Amino acid sequence: MQIISENKTANILLLTALGLIVIVMLSSFVNRVVISPPVDANIEEGIEASENETVIQVNVLNACGETGLAAKVKEFMRLRGFDVVEIGNFPSSEEKSYVLDRVGDMGSARKVAYAIGVPDSMVVSSIDSTLYLRSTIIIGKDFASLKAFN
Image 1 (cartoon, rainbow, N blue to C red):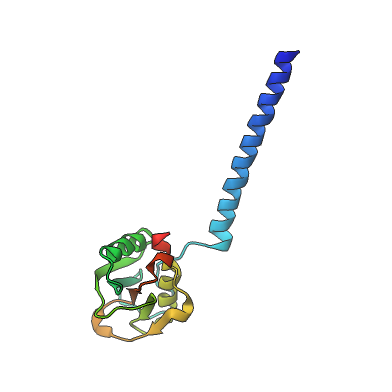
Image 2 (spheres, one colour; image 1 turned 30 degrees about the horizontal axis):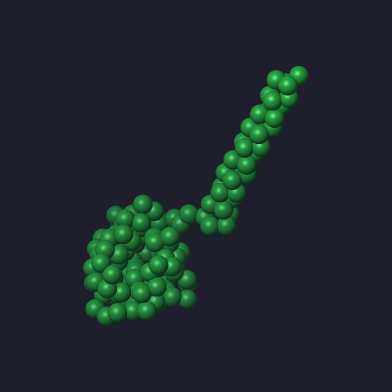
C-alpha cells in the first residue's frame, strides 16, 4: 500500500512540474507572437528602394562614450535581419537614444526603432541620401534601457 501511495505522489509531482513547464512555454509563446512580435527587417512593398535593396540598411553611432556599445548593437540588429553597414562614434554626447530616417521612409525607421526599443516619438527625419542607408541609430546615455542591453 505504501508503494502505491509513493507512486501516486511522484506522479502528482511530475504532472505538476510538467504543467508548470507547459504554462511557462505557452506564456512565452503568447508574449513573442502577440504582445511583442518580432520585427520584419524587410523594406515594405511599394517603398522606393534600389534594385538590390531588400532589407533595411542602418548604421549605428555611439553618442554616450561607453566603449563597445555600437558593436553590441550591430550584432543585436544583424541577428534580427537588419543590414548594419557601419558603426562609429557620434560627434556629440546625447542623453537619449533615437533613430534618424535618412531617406524619407519613416516606416523603415520605425521598424528599426521598434527592434532596438526606441519609442516612435524618438524617430526623427534627417534626410541624407549620400549615406546610402535607410536609418541611423544614435545610442545615447540611456542605452541600458535598449533591448540590446536587456
